[in-house]
Amino acid sequence: MKKVIFLIVACFPFIMKGTEIQSLPTDTIIRVANKHIQVKESDERLKVKVFEVVEEEDTVYNEQVFEGIYKNGTSRERRFHNSFTITLPKWRQRVSDPHWSGFGMGFANLTDGSLRMNSGEGIDVKSGKSFQFNWNLYDHAFQISRLGWAVVTGLGFRWDVYRFDGNVRLQEIEGITRVLPAPQGIYYSTSRLKMTRLTIPLLLEWQRDLRHHKPFFISAGIVGGAKIYSNSVIKYRDDRGHKQKDVLGKDLNLRPVTMDILAQVGYRSLGVYAMYSPISLFEKNKGPKVCPVSIGVMWYFF
Image (cartoon, rainbow, N blue to C red; front, side):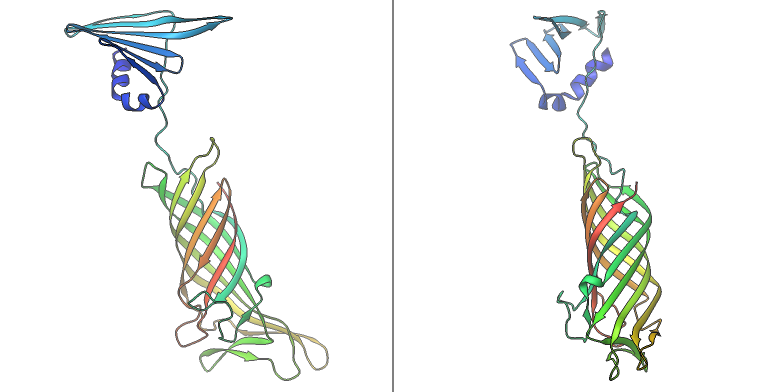
C-alpha cells in the first residue's frame, strides 16, 4: 500500500484534472471516479482512508476498503474485503502506424516554377487523362516526441503518365529534348510520356487518436526519386489508314534523380496528398522547363 500512497502523491497534478478536492483545516478528500480518498494529517501522524461508493437499489453509501496510519517512520495498514485501483490518464501518444506504405492514385500535370499550367513551353497536358500511381512497399517510423510526432521513411515505386494535347510529341534531337508538331496530314491519337521511379521519403508525421480508432494524421516532407525507366510514345494512322505506334526515345534527358515536396492528411487508412517538385523534370538546358505537380488519394497498409 505504500506504493499506492506514493503513486497518489507523485501523480497528484494529473489526478487534480479529473477529480474533486475538498480541503478542511486538517482533512483532504480526493474523489476519483467512485473512490473517495481521505487524508488526515497531524503533527505526529498521517492517516489515509479509502472508501468506495456502493449503489444498491435506492441506497448509496461509502464502504471503506483501506486504512493506513503512518507515524514516526512506522506504518500500520489494514485492507478490507475489497480493493481499489486508480487509472491514470494516458499522456503518451505513440506513432504506431506510419502513413507511407500503400497504394495511391492521382492526377498528374506539368507547370512552370510559378505553378501555372501549360506555361508556354509548348506542352499542353491533358489533365483528365494524365495519371500518377504510387505503390509503396515499406515504411518505418522513428518516434521523436511523446506528443505524436515521428520521422517516417520507407521505400516505394511511382508511375507518371503524361498525355499531351495539341498534336505534338516529345523527341530528343541532337541531345536536346524538344516539343515538335506532327508532320503534315498526321494526327496523333496518343502522345504521351511515361516514367517509373524508385521513391524514398523523409517525412515528419503527427498523429492524434480520435475515439480509440486509428489516428487522424498530418504528414509532410520530401520524397527522393531515382528514375528506372521512361519513354515517349505516339500512336497514329498513316496515309494508308494503318495504325502505327512509335517509341521516340527512352531517355529524353529526364533527370535521373528528382526531389518532390509531399503533404498528406487523412484518417484511419485513407488520405489525400499533394506533391510538387521545385526542380525541372528535364536536365538544365536539355529540355522544356517544366515541374511535375500532382494530387490524389492513398489507401495505406498497416
